[in-house]
Amino acid sequence: MKSIYMNLYDILEIGDDFPTVIMGVLNLSPESFYQGSVYTDIDSLERATLDMIENGAKILDLGARSTAPWSQKITIEEEINRFKSAMEFVCKIIPKDIIISVDTQYSRVAEVAYDLSLDYEIKIIINDVSCLKTDPTLLDFIIEHELPIILMASKEIPGDLCTIGEIIQEFDRTIKQLKSYRYNENNIILDPGIGKWIEEKIHTYDLKIINDLPNLRTLIKPILVAISRKSFIGTTLNIPNPEDRLNGTLSSTAIAVYNGAHIVRTHDVDKQLLEIVKMAEEIRRNH
Image (tube, rainbow, N blue to C red; front, side, top):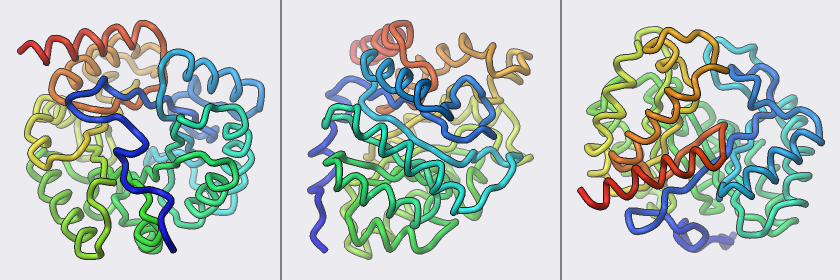
């Protein structure tokens, strides 16, 4: 089947020569660790969607399954049930230049999203926190349809890599695998997997990964950081409640952008975030 995409750069201005891309998080899962990001009714989903776009989000990340390791597990059928109606609604109200990121590890969910994207002429990116490890058929699906993919650093289970050296090594292996299948490597975005995905990954690993982002740039792929309100901020600042981690999120985001992140995945898309990101960009450019 012929792809509806040429490559990622046909649908998104991304890279060192362009402003940092803002990805707004729209969680459809009540199990999510930050309840302020959960939109399980149409009214709140509509308000959040339109507010994020008005405030500068170019990508909306829809996820119907919490990926936090301690979250209650749901079936793929439940994930599809949550996802389908929400994406269909969002597709009806967003401009055609807004991209939907499909936060899933499963090809059946990706297929639902792909069919809706064709129906509504909306472009999608698949966002897989398992780096194509959870469901091997998702690899087949993105190759068949040449869908852009966000790969989060994972070797066996989501987020099980702790150092930038391990992360680069696994990304390099995965990129070579995809290229061997004639997948267009211009469709790959890299996410180093910040967060306490495994017990061994204490907060200092996340601090070091953010500091070491320039090393990840050696793979010459767009870099996404998903920092927003995560546990390493809570541990560092002794703030257990994600509701109170905004300052730590913003400061970490500024440093990540300065260190070369091209996409910021965030729960908070507003003027404050945009100004902080802009300042970090300008300082980096004038380094």
